[in-house]
Length: 241
Ligand SMILES: NC(=O)c1ccc[n+]([C@@H]2O[C@H](COP(=O)([O-])OP(=O)(O)OC[C@H]3O[C@@H](n4cnc5c(N)ncnc54)[C@H](OP(=O)(O)O)[C@@H]3O)[C@@H](O)[C@H]2O)c1
Image 1: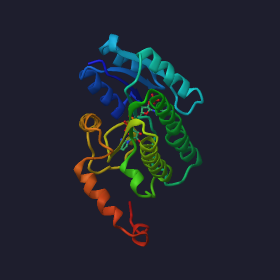
Image 2: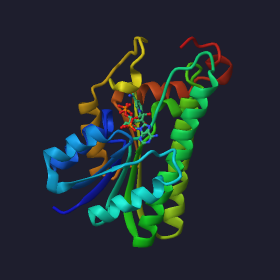
Image 3: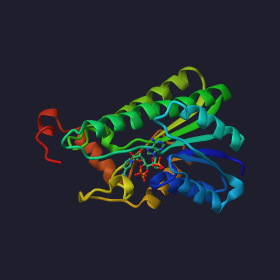
Image 4: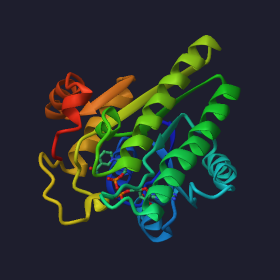
């Protein structure tokens, strides 16, 4: 197999696990994030099949750096976007809200756009990104996180329709996990129904292979999100979460 994937946000958590699984499946991968050390550690596991690039998705040169990484890798069949930040922000601290917007909305749009234009020119490709179940309802404890995840999901849906209308063979997969035990949830809050990043990554890789459009992980969160879609706004605002 000589398939090539770029994983942005591969330095920890779910992105790192997906990178490991793709490597184990024989993929050639390009990995990116801000922290170089964990990326180099990934490279050390299969030096001839891993390319590394530090990328900060909030910086203007991030798209350019992605294309350099694609060139180093010798092409890209799959773009996987795992970069993201998220914090509870019950006091609406401005810095947290704005940094979340810059990373999850502006950075996301920059990177997904670069990958989409690359695939549009090539004629085909696959974009998969981790949004979240948090984007399916406005969550009081984390307004910017919840809103940016909704933006990501809507953006991916729009691209899916655009690709079809332009007759581009670009597949889009929107991954929506529930709570996963990663550095992102490093506060003391007792998150329920916590999943392991390894398990979630396995589901993601299978969802990519099956070319799913949307994948909510796992079944308990599929039930939960279906349920809360039915809750009317007047009742939702009374919910204590
Ligand atoms: N954990 C959960 O419960 C959960 C649930 C649903 C969805 N998600 C989503 O899953 C994705 C991965 O999160 P995770 O849980 O695996 O957390 P994580 O371990 O904190 O991973 C986040 C990744 O994003 C990268 N990143 C953050 N800011 C970046 C920036 N400005 N430029 C480039 N890369 C950046 C980090 O790398 P550097 O710090 O090295 O840059 C890291 O590789 C996120 O989009 C998150 O919203 C997580």
